[in-house]
Length: 287
Length: 287
Image (cartoon, rainbow over all chains, first blue to last red):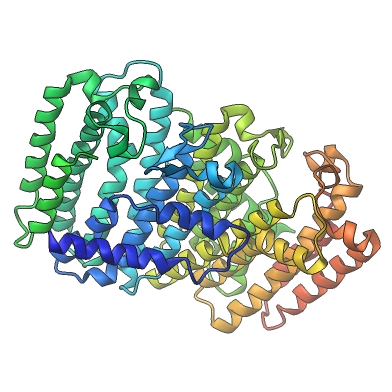
């Protein structure tokens, strides 16, 4: 879809130059850019831009928000991959940050990306009320009651079986919260209403759940080449997954059902094509 | 000084309850509070409150700013102490975070504190323009061009001798930048003028330099008991220090000179007693 491709290009262009104004101490900026510019689907920042335009805002204006969300996502991947966490050697087909720059630099690159995310938000040329709302939303979704909380549940859950409810909670925090923040920031930046923000949040929750279940499916049925990371890692790490709990077929049906619910949450928006397409592509993705 | 003690109590009380509203996933909140409530001098948040009142603001109103700065400081200590960084076992007389909670949890507790810092800023009941300025200032001082940049220089500098200029740059980033942010946030929260903010920043830069040189002095002349951490660690870790470069006597003179300069930077403020006292106490501290 042409519109989504335009958003993706906007995000890539913005990210590419974002850190270039910063002084380079040692290899810090290089390490930050290594992970930030490693490709990836850019689901979250594209979501921010698409939601913004669906709520009648201009995508250009929320680029600093979109970029901030992607910086948070990137930092979380770097820290997740650390030897003391998941100890992963590959990410998006490339050696992980600590493999290239060493563990200490990977910790610091992550810290600097997380800090830089909030700097990016604060630089948006939008009414300050909206910027404050964005900071509050992103921090709340990414912090101890959101993404980091989900990480802790994930870590604590390794090696013993989780119930479906426990797994839902874990994933809604670990993956869902940041996807929700990405969508909400688009609405906030457009100056959207409270009702619009709630609808967008509902859409994002469904999308996040579908995304995670699809991830679990792909970890079983895809190839390492298509994913850019080892397959079967969930089984190897003794992690609870939706496929393990519900089986492949029920998972596939659930992805369809959640996609449907996501699309329906957008009923109030006349210009929802982009976000409908995102949800459908998500359900069909093979990597 | 009574006023400073009042600020310290305000900070402790605020920090104590700050995380109590958050859902506790695993031992995350416990780990965050373990480090956040481990005492310490509270130099930075007290600075925020004191500057705010010197600029005719109300200390209560900038507590969320002060608390945010202390959360950034605390996260940086947790990550600094990690095995892949300084590998320290003791901090403020207690086992370091990763010794108690494990390495993964220490990384995550640090991440959550850093994220929580910006959430705290966003919750201040102040005009949104001021909150946005505070986010921008703190993120800029704490990120790749500030504190984290200083960490990288520190790491890269280990094992070979730095020039005085290199050491000044390193320390002004690693320690000075956050102390400056603490002071500037007090001025921002009080709605201070640009001239006031510059004066306060100058004071904080001098204070930060004096603080670091005094740290180097204490690492040589103090006892492990008084410091709550091993002495002689700079020599043991082969780190460049001001004492190593300039000798004890010149360092002591420099601390006096910087304290004087800090005090003079405040000439425009009628109510500067508190900040003068902070600078003087800093120069005389033995731990």
